[in-house]
Length: 67
Length: 553
Image 1: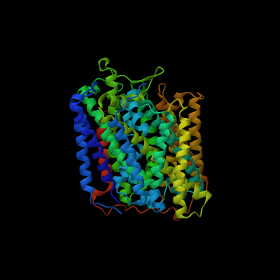
Image 2: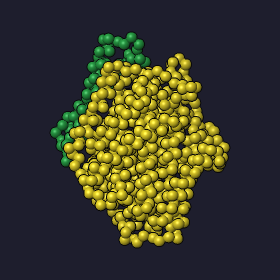
Image 3: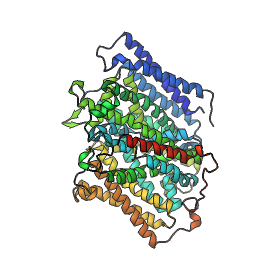
Image 4: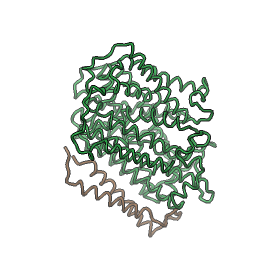
C-alpha cells in the first residue's frame, strides 16, 4: 500500500491549493469586513507553503509501496 | 454566543477532510486481513509513523482548546504539562520500559499484567481501563459537539452523531491502522491549521518579548514563582508540580495508558518501538508554541482595550475554551477559517479514534478472550474487534450525553486519570523493576490505590477533609488538588503493594524472564552505532527540555 506520507502530501496540496486560490480571489474581491492583518494576505502565502510541502511529500513517496 | 460563520470554501475544506478519512478507511480495509492487522496495525510501522501517532493520540479535544484556555486562566505554568509533565515519562518509557512491553509480544498493557502477575490483576486493569476509556471518549465527543454547536451553530444531536458515525466508520473498517493514518494527518493539519494563529499573534503584538512583557509576572514564568503558591497563576508549589504532575500523573499516563502505548506496540521492531516515544518527545516539546503561545496572545489582547478582543461569557462565567476559536475568527480569512476548524475537528476525531481503538483491543483480548470466550479463533476476534468498535461508539454517545450534565469537564477528566493511571503506574514500576513483588501484592495494591484515589476525590468534593491536608499548603487551585491527589494515590498503592508482597507467595523466577529488570538480557540495541541508539536521542531530548526550562524560568 501507499505510505501515509503520500496521503499527507495529498491532503496538504488539495487544501493548500483551495486556500491559495481563495486568497488570490480575495485579493481582487476583498471582503467587506477585513480581518486583522488581512493586508499581509496570510491565505496566499500560507496556502502556497502548504502546496509546496504537500508536493514534496507526494513526489518523494509517489513510487514507494510498503508491505 | 455567536457562531463564527463559515463560507462555502470553509465548508468545502471541512467536507474534503471528512471524505478523505472515510476514503482512507475503505482504502486500508483491503490490507486489514488478520487480527494483528486490525489491533496492532500489522506491527510494521516505522518509528516516525508510530511516534507521530503516539503523540497525536493524546492531542485530542481538551488538549488543544482546553490547554489554550488554561493558559489564559493559569499562565505559563500550563507549559509544565508539555515539558516536565510529559518528557521525562516519555523518555523513561522508551529507554527503560519498552523492552519489557515490546519483547513480551503482548497486545495490550493489561496483557503485561497477566504475564508479570496473574489473570485477576489483568482483568481488574482491563475493566478499569475500558470504563475509563469510554468515559473519556464520551467527554471527547461532547467537547467536539460543544465546538460545533457553539462556534458553527450546529445542533447538539447532529454534531455528536456526525462525529460518532465518521469515527465508527473508519475504525471499524481497518482498526488501528486507519486510526494511526488519521492521527498523522491530524498532526499535520493541527500544525498547518493552528500555528498560523501564533505567527499572526506575534506579528500583531510586535514580538515574543513584547508578549511576555505585557503579561503579569505571576503568569509569565515557569519556575521562579513556584516557591510560594500565592505568587503564581496556578497556586501551586514546585513540590506539587514535580511529584504530582511531573512524576505520578505524567508517568502514570505516558507509560501505562494503553491509548498511547498501543502506538508503540505497532512498531516494526524493538528499536523502532523504543524510538517511538523518544521521537514524539521532540514534537511534544514544540506544542506549546501553538497552544500556550495562543493562550498568552489571547491574554495580552484581552488586557488591551484597544484590541477589541475579549473572551465569551456564558451567564457571567468566562468561557476560557473560546480563546483559540476567537483568535481563528480574528485573524483567518475565508478558506483559512475552514482549515482552522478542520484542525480542531481532526484533533477531536483522532482523539476519539484513539480511545475507541484502544478500547476494542482491551475489550477483545483482556475481557472477552480472557473471561468470556477463551477459545476464540483469530477470525472471531477480528469480528469481535469490529463489533466492539460499534458498541464502544454507541456507549460513548451515551457518556457524551451524560457529560453534558457535568459542571466542569476538566475536573472529571483529571479525576478519572487519577483513579486509574496513578495507582497503575506504581504497580508497573514495582512489577518491572523489583523481582519479589507478588501477584497478590499487585492486585490488592491496585485495588487500594484506585479506591483511595476515588475516596480522596469524594472527600475533597464534599469537603470531608480540608484541602490543605492534601496539598500541604493553605493556598491551592483545583489543578493543585488534582496533582496532589494523584501523588497520594500512587504512594498508597506503592506502599500497600510492597507490604503485601512481603507476606504472599512469589512467582517463580523462570516465569519472569524478559518481564523484570535483572532477569532480562541487558544488551538491547548495543550492536548499533552510538548515534542511532535510542539513548542518544533521549539525552538530546533531555538537553532541549532543560534548555527550555532555563530559558522560560
